[in-house]
Length: 243
Picture 1: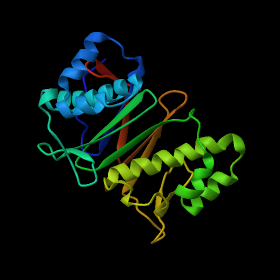
Picture 2 (picture 1 turned 90 degrees about the vertical axis):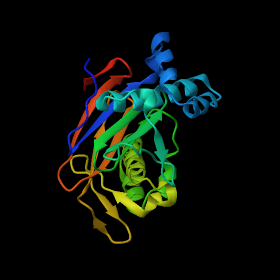
Picture 3 (picture 1 turned 180 degrees about the vertical axis):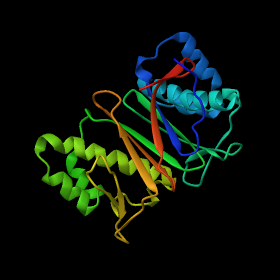
Picture 4 (picture 1 turned 180 degrees about the horizontal axis):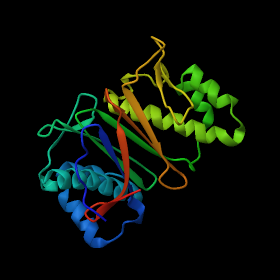
């Protein structure tokens, strides 16, 4: 394994961690030690031990990645949030990051100079596909309705994670309705279309990654030039490896 490093301009690094496979007491002690009192309180409020564990590892992941890449102490990092709750580093405004976690997995995306959003989902969980009619645009809901039954769940999560990644990159929460924009079904050339203008925005670029069976990661970034998305596996306070 190697140590995390800052992405160059035009790159977004995507780090995947299986929190539910980390049980080393020494590592867990390090994770807890590096968090702020507010982060510890948030993790401890979860009812289920698995959720407390996932919150602990996820927050340690963010601190580890940024601290190693910038030469800071993990505990010294000070996070602020915008009016919609998206966290950022006031002392390092050129570093953009976003965190997502679901069912034992955590993902953190880190970029320079440009906004970034990420979402991870467990595609094996029970899901009512019919909610596409409520939350997807009419065009997306029609796409899901027309594919064979065996492909519906995959397409649903492909679109759902892209929408979540975009919303999180914008940083305005659900003040932007999920059905106000659409994604196509072309994995090789993912495009977003805004329903009010019927226009695409080529500066928005997207990346989808299946780090292991049953997991889907979507990443959103906005840049005038092509973005290089680089995926890594990571164990916080141990290292990263190319995937």
